[in-house]
Image (cartoon, rainbow, N blue to C red; front, top):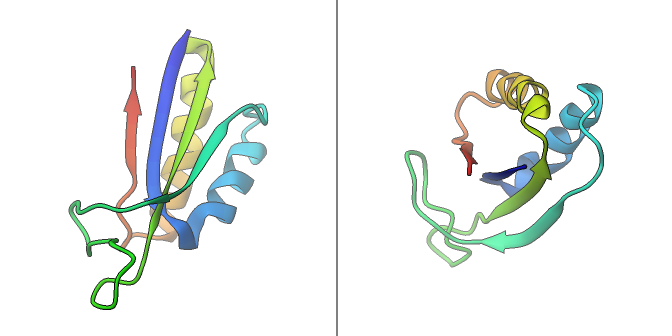
Length: 90
C-alpha cells in the first residue's frame, strides 16, 4: 500500500481530478481543500499579497496504480507548465 500526496494550485484541481479519472485511477481519495505554502512558483498564501491557495490530494493505492497517477500528473504539468505540482509517494 502506498500513500500519494499531491499538492497543487486550487485553480487546477478539477483538471487534475479529470486526468486521474481519464487514466482509470479509482475515485478513492481525500482532499484537503485549502493549503498555504511556498514552493518553486509563486507563493500560495491566501492573503492580500499572495491570494492564491493550494489543495492537497491524498490517495492510498496499490503500487501498480502509481504509473497511472504519474501519467495524469504529467498530462496536467504539460497543460499548466507555469504551475508547480508537488507529488510525493510514501
